[in-house]
Figure 1 (cartoon, rainbow over the protein chains, first blue to last red):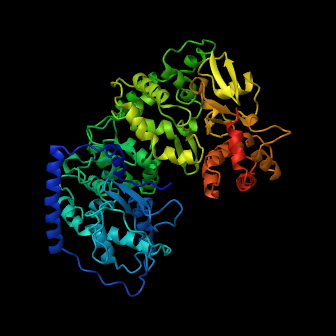
Figure 2 (figure 1 turned 135 degrees about the vertical axis):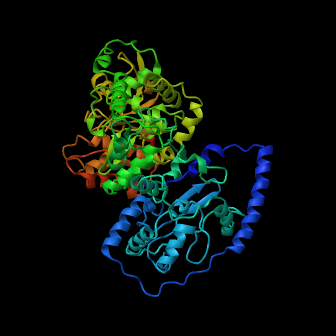
Figure 3 (figure 1 turned 180 degrees about the vertical axis):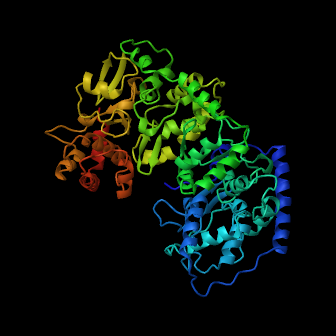
Length: 466
Length: 163
């Protein structure tokens, strides 16, 4: 399953109802018009020339190619540039945006349909300026607003890696964007407003490790694509770095001081999460983050440590013994085996319908000494999905389950066909009440409706309830 | 008491609401097609259909499937008169130890009812959560292909909804 690591599925949450244009929308439309005109002018002034095609296929040093493989993994390049049935990097994945469908390009070295003719200068310009070899503006669905921070050496390594992949002929169909958004030159205006061109400049007030981490997180890692909120034009809001975003039907939780994680994040917890996709005080990387964590797992220890150091610096410092205390406190809320067996033979022992669902469907594994240690469930009181104000991630997990990818298999079954909406809402309310001290989730019905769409439709077509 | 509609019949079940559907099917209703494999929703041998979709009966409490349409292997056909899909499994000799096969058949049944002409990729995707230890996967795939190609899909759908 190819994941698109962007914010675009947010469109599905907000674009369902047509309403009369409000004053602020009108103001916005005028502002948009001004931006469009300014963009056209800027585009004219700053248009980029075509870069001459390569005449000879380049050759590369193996160590540079290997480094490029690792960096391309960090950048999740294959995630968007590969379809489920297609060859790696051959492009063609439909990326839904609020503005229309953008299709990922073929970045294999095929000469007619890929980047086989691109010299390194053209590739660097694409990464840093969002412009292709011919001089066309690329759409910011491609996160060049992050990749621009990458160093020349790192960009060269990714170029070497991609150019040494097997060429695949795949002529990707045009984007489906309405007029005037299909005019690529308009992106020049967006770039003027939102592209802070790289490469990364080190913060002299911070150490090397912190700077390395910031470079990886904000650059190739493009963590902000999912974890930073965006404005109406789809740009990440500059002064809300990693304050929580939305992608692919999942909430990218805040990684700054507003993080909803019950136990907080230490350098060690972050490093464990990026290395193993799991942390003792947080549980597993889920949804789109599972693939991201599988990619960061390829990084060397020093880069993992650097990313963890930078990310931890965004939050109030948490001591290791506080983590241990949080884990222990969370354990207190877990169901005990005794609690379960006490229910046997007591037909009406449970009054709360959500608790009844939990007892029958969840408590087998989600209790002290749960029966599936291999999937490493942590106490639900440590779950960010349960603790955060938005129930979306909790619903995604319950409806669609959790699958391990390497090796593939189920780690948590899905309950989309088992639970109807009312039962799911009962369960959500019970879990929220029992495992947190937070107020009940609001607007559950709409969140359930949103979480059921997409994956559920695909499973319905297969007759799968999970 | 929980009311369950299984294979076209209605049963009043005297069991705690949290009881897994699988236990009731096997212990109370003597419908032993669905198997207890892992009991944790990991292997698929307990798969049955609820409202036409494949679900894992070992992690499904009876309280949540009250008054919904439950179909087990026994609801498809009999030894004397197997359903087209069951016959296809027999024709392809798709069982070795056979423990996983009821779950495989039920998930394949749900697939064919939703998608009478699945691609091989669809079949693999639909069944990927069901495990077989003997390694008859290729025969299982052939059996489903055979049923799908047999032009008996309409009949399958009728059978699946019989009650």
